[in-house]
Every structure is written in structure tokens, then in C-alpha cells.
Length: 294
Image 1 (cartoon, rainbow, N blue to C red):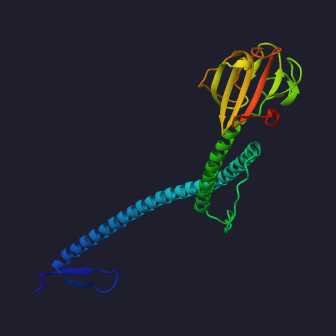
Image 2: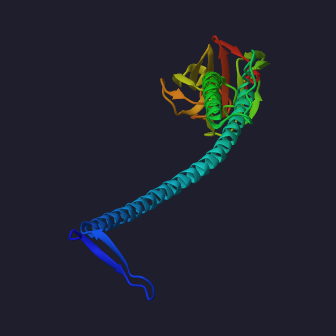
Image 3: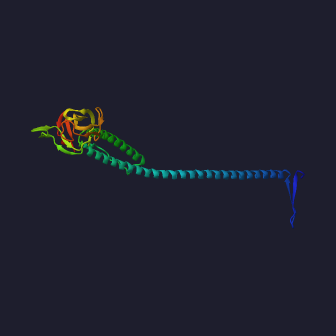
């Protein structure tokens, strides 16, 4: 009757013996359940470990990413700070150079007697203090572009002006003393008076003669009463004449700069002693050189 069951006896120290019956298959099921539970527990623990390891790896990756981001942010902050400092330095340097250019421009205007540039028109002020770095750079770039345009125009005008001035005979062609002026004088070779067409500058034989202005040599030879003579054409109807030279040191066709040595003082031609006869001609008419010479 009980062959398919197991008997379990409970023998207390005192009292009645208790007897139970369980199916033969129950231990097997209990074992299977135990194994399943063990597998579940093992799997769950493995899952927890894997999850933990995964979280730890994720945390490590996040920590590394955060560290990289912090480094990048720090570098960017440093770059921004350096950029701001460089921007301020650049702005100060630009303004400083512009002030220097303005001073040079003013000096050139005075030197060349160049009228100052007129400026005007409507404008809106630009506030550098409240501008961001990009706006500052754009503003500085525009300022420099405008300054370049302004200076290019001025330098072209200055070049023309100084080229014109270089052709004005305004420096003394010799270092001696004026022995005879322009205009009516007593005839040094006889009685009466004569009109002197230039000025005479007395100096020792062989002293240097320099060009009073830039120009082109159109005559360099023995020229009648002028003796050894040089004539330079300066353009704009201006010519200078250098007479009675002991030597001419330039040839026809040569371009001469103001201050170049062109000959040596002598007493050739109609002359009573070593000196330079110097003339300035305007449209081939002699004028008083002292109106030009400084």
C-alpha cells in the first residue's frame, strides 16, 4: 500500500512516535529545485558581478572623459585668457603704431609743406570695452585697412611733393662767400656798369661744386665767356648754370641728384679769379638765385 512512498519516523525523547509518508519522487524534485535555485543564484551573482564590472568600466570611462573635458576646458580657458591678453596687446600695439604713423605723417607734411588731409562725414562710435574678441579683431582689421589706404594715398602725394622739391634749386652750390650779387654791378673788367645775370661765389681753386637740385645735365663743355660750364635741366622750366669751372665732373645726359658733386671751382672764361658763377633760369629767363637758395 505504501510501496510508492517513503516513511519518515519522528522519535521524540518522550511521547508518541510520529510517522509520515512522502512520495519517492519528492527528493528528486527537491534536488532539481535546489540545483535550479543554485544555478539562478549563481547566474544572478554572475550578472551582478558583470553589471558591477560594467558599471565600474563605464564609471572609469566617464571619469577619463570628464578628466579630458576638464583638461580641454582648462586649456580653452587658458587660450581665451591668452587670447584676450593678446587681443589687448594687439589693440595697444595697433593704436601705438597708428600714433607713430600720424606723427611721421605730420612731420612729412611740415617738411614738404603738404596741406593736411581733410576728414569728415557722419560716423558711429565703436566701443572696444564692450566688444567681444571677434568684433575687436574685425574692427582692428578695418582700422588697419583704412589706415593703409590713407597712408598709401598720402605717400603717393608725398613722393610727388618731394620729387618736386628735389628739383627746386634751393641749396648753395658752393661753400664760399658771395662776391657779387644778382643785378646791376660795376664792371669788374673796365669802366661803367653791367647787369650780372647770376651770383658769384668766391672760393679756392678746386673747391667742390654741388648740384643745387635734381635734374639732367644738358650741357657740360667750354661755353664762351662762362668757360667750363655745366647746365642742368630740373624740369618745370627750371635750369641752373655753373660757370668758370676748373673741371666738369659730369657728362651730358647724366641724371644728377641734389647735393651731388658736379665740378670744381676755377677761373676759366671771363673771370678775374677762382669763383663759381651760378644762375637760376625760369623759362630761360635769369632770376635772382637768392630768392631760391636757403
